[in-house]
Length: 127
Image 1 (cartoon, rainbow, N blue to C red):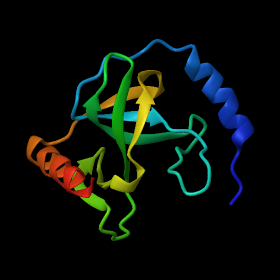
Image 2 (image 1 turned 90 degrees about the horizontal axis):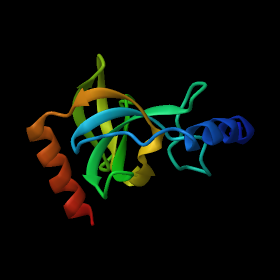
Image 3 (image 1 turned 90 degrees about the vertical axis):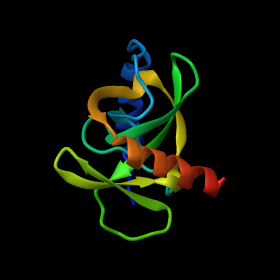
């Protein structure tokens, strides 16, 4: 699997000079996840984007996110979360990570409250 780390490095440098974003728990955002090592979840396209849901705030600049996927692959660590911009999405529990809010690009909307509550419960059970 070839990854364009050089192109991601250019995007990462541009991301670093961005302003921090205001965010709220339960929001879904397009996020610059980048080109990552091995099986860590990557973003795609020229900005290395992937939708994420914000699970927990750790201040104005850092938050815990779960990447989302439209893949229909079944796995115990993929939790169906419903429609995100016209596609059925699942949260990738195995790929949760802390990000700087400068990685957040565009807010998509909010995750359904009931779905979010179930998602957090599943995450807690996992830990």
